[in-house]
Image 1: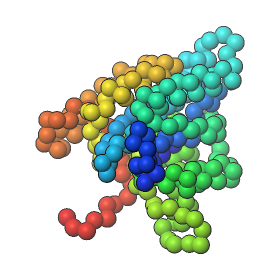
Image 2 (image 1 turned 45 degrees about the vertical axis):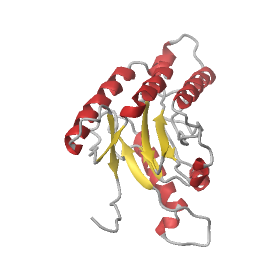
Image 3 (image 1 turned 90 degrees about the vertical axis):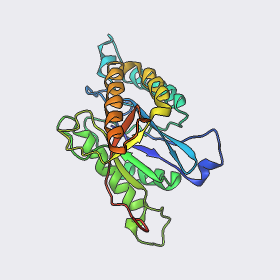
Length: 250
């Protein structure tokens, strides 16, 4: 179970080679998870610099190895995640909160709020709030949404340190229809598709998902081309924006 935070802040602009922050929340490195998560990366151009979004997950395949241990699974997955992050120029942070079940304690919520306050993200990506196959996914989604609101002072000024409420998106789940995922935002990842593939290849414990998400990127690219009326988009990723846009004019 993961939360991905994309921090597109003024601090990032001070480091030209640094293209984004991302953080995993919950499931990464969990020893006893039997289900998988997708490994995926997306790149976008925002305010003249690129932000990179990436995520990693557990793998039941590692537990097919005789005499496997929690510590070894954590080590392997951490190494894979670090390599994948490097492939897309992101930084990696693992909170290692566990999974199956994922229980959000008061201390864990404080950690997550502190992460929001530290990174001051402009965009937050997390799981869809409904998943009939992975009970930990909705738990992580609700925790992310709660931490976002608390870090932002629930949208009002307060006497405490707070952040500007970041945009919130759900990324596409493995079973989108069953999770009631309704994409309303498509990101053109054509310029960084090679980086995405390299990041997925780093996640050797979940190699069977590489073809699936490569094919999905091509299908979403087709959708994006039809929506935008342009032939330039070859690969895309779908997201569900949760809040209305606030604009000066149409």
